[in-house]
Length: 375
Image (cartoon, rainbow, N blue to C red; front, top):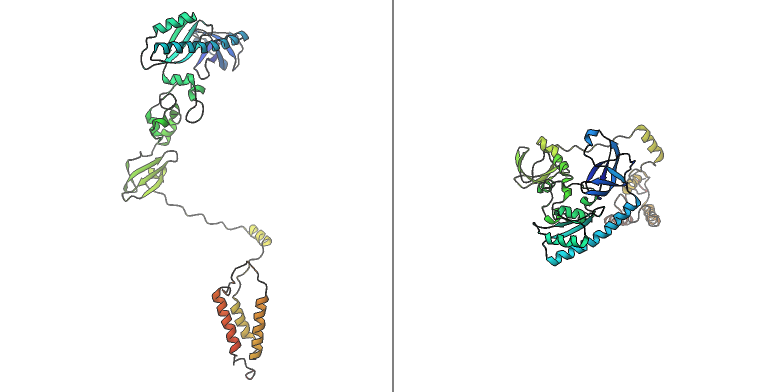
């Protein structure tokens, strides 16, 4: 037997029907026979073959929806708004302790279903008489919970997206406060509650993952033994598997889950040494890069050695040479960065002062060792 899966609301439950001989595709509108009468549904899974023993109690697909069927569905939608307003007016007039959520017409118009919420049982017999007298059809009052109310009304969640129960959540799974505790969430009712006032359905989406990652990790606030000392667990990051421990002296440090299982902290590995370049890279570097500049030799030492090698001169010639050297230094163009001091320190105030003193001594005190008489 060929069966097809059909839904009647955007995020409603899915039901299997006997597709019979119809060639249906996903998204097609069909008219089916249900326990409550005929209904218009949408195909969500294409037809597939199953054994007859598994499909004995399935209802049949009557026909693919025609243009008249779609037009009747639009008319019923407009009549639902009118029925909702009329019933809400009667509830306010009678001051009944109930909240009307939605009115829904059966596809063939044989019955109207009114969904409402209330804290307890409500005697709505007189209300049903007024509705039946006005609409001349069967009336059904169905009490639902707050989660079903949010599913029918719709809206946006605290995440900014449309409610899960309105888009893809077909059934409500049980949600407990334990799920929020396991995920380390603050137990603030305003942050973990949904539009219906109950716990968020999305708390159950990652609960199993958190339980799997939490294996082997201690609970926050417990005392554990680590590296031979009794320590206090201050914080546990489940996703990163990091544990914050505090010693008896108040020192805090973080360890990983693997280190906690081993009972000791692994020593930090030294940084890797830079690998030596290959001979080919060295040759390429030597060919393409200029030779390294050697540090400049102090100027004062070069002058002293050069003076020792020169032939002795007279005091007058030494004074003239010193004056010429001083003028050349003044007129010589400065190279390098502006404001940079020479390597011998002569650019600093102290170096300038020493240099000027040496010049004055050479001018005033002639050297006897270099006199012409000894030469």
